[in-house]
Image 1 (tube, helix red, strand yellow):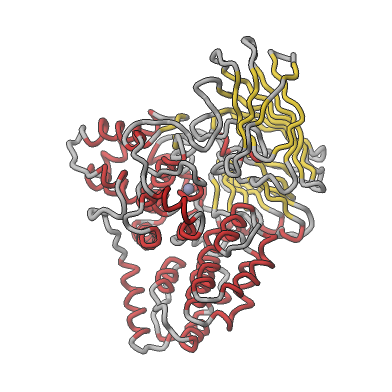
Image 2 (cartoon, helix red, strand yellow):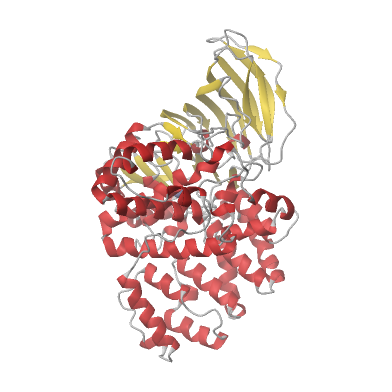
Length: 627
Ligand SMILES: [Zn+2]
């Protein structure tokens, strides 16, 4: 997933003040250096009985905002007396167990619901039980994974839309399942949608609307349940290459196909680095703007925010990122959310390698330097000694969302860059290729990765690397391979000229891409007066940019520099339209920190109905709204 903002986790400081502080201390748990696979965020007990295939059958009711039907699992019994699934806010009608076609209704038990984790759904097993079926529906307003959009919230404003977001622990709000990243299942699904809409999933997908409204899906590769995903809307498909294409609303699909024209090239570059793509097709669906993340790597079908459509193909690193997850995350998966960096650190490293292969080193260097800026900001926010700055996290008792910071993404990626420097690129690439192959369709803990790393890289080439400091220690180790970017040095020179009195119009900005502009805005002083801000805005038209990254960076600076009141309509329109958390958090927080909490709340009241639960939960806490 690409979700993070450099400032997101400061939130943690506002919420749960008491227990948060306690939880920041690493527990002297054996997990530190061992290979403990306990997932504290799931009720499932896979060592007793485990699910291995799901047949999902759901009807989509837009009027009631409910999904209803059943989830049937083939299970691996292992002699256990019960199997435990995760369920949160589900209306369970009945549960049956059986062998083959035969079904017998059984008495199930739901444990006391935990607000974060939901309940354990305990289903008794007979010695011959091979199949369990849960008949259920989602609750209106209670399925945090599912975003139900009114036609007004879509690009074309004619039909409703829905999408799901499972990561980290939300799949259990629309499917009762063993919702742990350490458990893999295959699935098939039958979805009944209104006849004018198309349904697509993280599976083999239709490319045309079926007037019956009935869609059947198969995902034959085993995946963790957080990667099960569904979208339903008025969709069209456009191919890009032989194995790649885009889905979007009719008015968006052409723009999306233009923007992502390099997808096939990226796929070829990725395969050249770390081995064959094992998921058949790679498509992207562009969702309405309330999607809370940049992208979500649902296998075969990345879910993406429309905010990466800039018109100039400048924000497509996100596609490289989600594509890279087809190896790191989807093929080899973190066993628990404490090992999240195994998904994201590897993916950011891999994303930059793809971008380097397709667009050259100077482009990848800019991405790395922006990433380093994000990392520094996050470490400052969290505190350099905070246990939340360890790569190996300690999220027991907390929302795994708390771990979605730039630590996992950027510190993780820089650690791999360091390993590359120490081993040499050729050796390191060989190591990674072998790592993906050796662990494909498996899950790994940090401890298991370290063992593999020691054996296959460190000892093999007799390298000296401070692995423990990087993985189990706080902050940014001294030997971080600092990125340098010649193109950003040129930007720095222009910032210097501006501060020395040059008129904004006189700056040399001719060849700049989005990344140079971002670097420029990030390096403007935070105490410029509104008059100066206005002059810069008039010269470069930042407040009316069609590029969401530039808008968000500029608005954040504007709020801090007292210029926001002059561009309030633009800021408000952006916050009401876009639900991507990476943009929302810094903007609302800037208002809050600059004594304008009331303004933030005023805007939020209008915007909140447009946000997915993931973003609503974060903003509710940030703005201290009771929900
Ligand atoms: Zn990611």
